[in-house]
Amino acid sequence: MLKQIVIISGKGGTGKTVFTASLAALASRKVMVDCDVDAADLHLLLNPRIVETHEFRGGKTARIDPALCIGCGKCAELCRFDATEEGVDAFSVDPLACEGCGLCARICPVDAVVMEEHLSGEWYRSETAYGPFVHAKLGIAQENSGKLVACIREAAKTIARSLDLDYVIIDGPPGIGCPVLASLTDTDLAVIVTEPSLSGIHDARRVIELARHFRIPAGIVINKWDINPEQSRNIEELCSEGVSLLGRIPFSKQVAASLIKARPYVETVQDDVAAAIRAVWEKIDSEPAGKDRRPS
Amino acid sequence: MVIAVASGKGGTGKTTVAVNLARVLGDVQLLDCDVEEPNAHLFLKPELTEKTPARVMVPEINEEKCTYCGKCAEVCAFNALAVIPPKAGLKGGVLVFPNLCHSCGACFLLCPEGAVREVHREIGAVEAGWAGAIRFVHGRLHVGEAMSPPLIRQVKKHIDRTRTTLIDAPPGTSCPVINALEGSDYCLLVTEPTPFGLNDLILAVEVLRVMGIPHGLVINRCDIGDDGVESYARDNGIPVLMRIPFDRTIAELYSRGLNIVDHSEGYANPFRALFKDIANHAEANRHHQRQGRHG
Image (cartoon, rainbow over all chains, first blue to last red; front, side, top):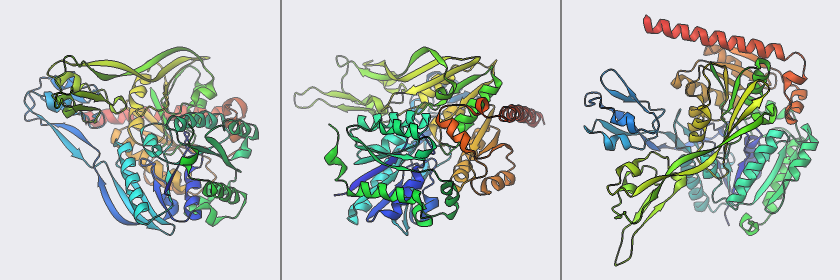
C-alpha cells in the first residue's frame, strides 16, 4: 500500500532537506516532492531533468481602470486589506496587499474594477537519478502556497499510483501554517527533524501538537544531537503515544561543505552522519504502514 | 526606524541577529513576527505581562432570515461558504468553513437578506512585555490555524514610530513574509554561504526589490561553505554588513538560549557597528529617494 511520508520541523534550517535528499538515494520505489514551494531547495541536490512544466494560477488580483474610476472611494472604504490607494484622479490597487476577494469589483458603482487571474507560479514533473520528482516555484511575492502544495501532492500521488510505487516522500516547509497543513494532511507518517536547542524543542513541540491534531503518527529525528546532549534527552522525552524516536544524527561540519557537491549526502560521504541517516530510513522502511499505528 | 531581519531560508540566524542587536542597543522595540514558531522570547526572556487574543471575523448565518439564495457562497472567493438549497420539503442549509475564511466581509456586505453577521474567531494571541529596556511583542498562532498574516498585522500594530523597531520575520518568501516586512525602512537578510543559502537569498532579494525595501546582508557561519553568496552580493551591489564565522561555542550558547553578546567577548562592538551601518544605509537610501523624486 502506498505510504506518504512528510518531513517537517517547525523551525527552519534543522536539516530537513539534507535528510530528505538522502532518503531519495536510500528509498526505492518512491516519488519525491518538494512542498517548500516558496524557498525550494531539494532540486539543488537531486539535479532534476524537467519533463513537464505546468502553470499555476492560484488567485486573482483587482485592477482599477483609471479611465472609468470616478473616485468615489467606495472600494477603499470597504476593503479590509487596505489594498486600495487614492491617487490624483483615480484609485489604484496595491497588488501586494490585495487578497483577491473581489469585494471591490462587486461594489464599484461604475464597474471600474476588474479581477485579473495571474500566474502565481509553476510546477514541474521531473526525472532524476533517484526516480520521479515533483517540485514547484511560487512566483515572487505570491500567495496561495497551500493551494500549490495541494496541487503538486496530487500530481505526485497520481504518479505513484500509475507506477505502483511504495512511497511518496515529501520535503515540507518550516512553520505550522497554511503550506505546512497542506503538506501534512492525509500523510501516513510525519518525520520531525529537530535540533537540540531551546528553539528546536519549542518548535518541535508545536509540530508534534499539530501532528496529533491531525492524528498523524510522528517520528522524531534529532539532528546535530551532540551539540547539546542534555537538550537531546529533553527532546527524547517528547516521545509518547503516536510519537516515536527514529534516531539521532551527530553534528559534522562536512554537511554544509557537502552541499556544493549537489548530491544526496549519503552518496558523497561515508561517515557517522551518513550511517545515522541510513539507520533512520531502515527504521521507517521496516515499520508497518503508518495508518496501522495511528494514535486514537 | 523599522528594521526587519529576514532570510528566505530558515535557520540561518535571523533570531540570533535580531536579539543580539536588541541586546546591544537596549532601548528598542523587538517584534517577533514569526508567529508560527516564535523564538525570540527564548533568548530575551521578557516578562510577558500583556496578553490579547488575536481574532478574525468570520460569518455566522441567521437561518431565520436566510432564503438559501446562494449569494454568499457565490461571492466568497475562498470557498468558505456552501449553500444547500431547500429541496422536496427539506430545509436548506449553509455550511461555513472558518479555516478558509479571509475575513473580507463580502458575504456579510452582499447578503440581500441581511442574514449574515460577523463573529469573532480566535486564531492566536499577541503577548507583550519588557526585557529590561527592550519593549517586546510577539504573536503565537494557535496550532492547527492556517493563516498567520492577520496575526502578524496585529503584532505590527504595536510599532512605535518614535523608537527603533526590530522585526524578526518568518522564513520563506510568501504572504507571512510580505506582511512582516511591509512598511520596513531597511531589511537585513541573514544568510549562509551554501547553495541552499544562496538559492533562498536570491528569492528574498527579489521580494525586497518588488517591495522597494533597501537591504544588506549578514553572512552567518561565513567560513563553512563556498563563495557563491559573496560573489552574488558583489555582482548585485548588495552590501555585506557583517560576517559571523562558525564557532561551536556560539552553537552551544544558542542551544541553551543564551546570547552571544552577553557571553562571548568581542561580539558587542560588531553588533553596534552593524546598527550604525544599517542607519547610514537607510538614511542614504531615503536621501537617494528624495533626490530621485525631485530630480
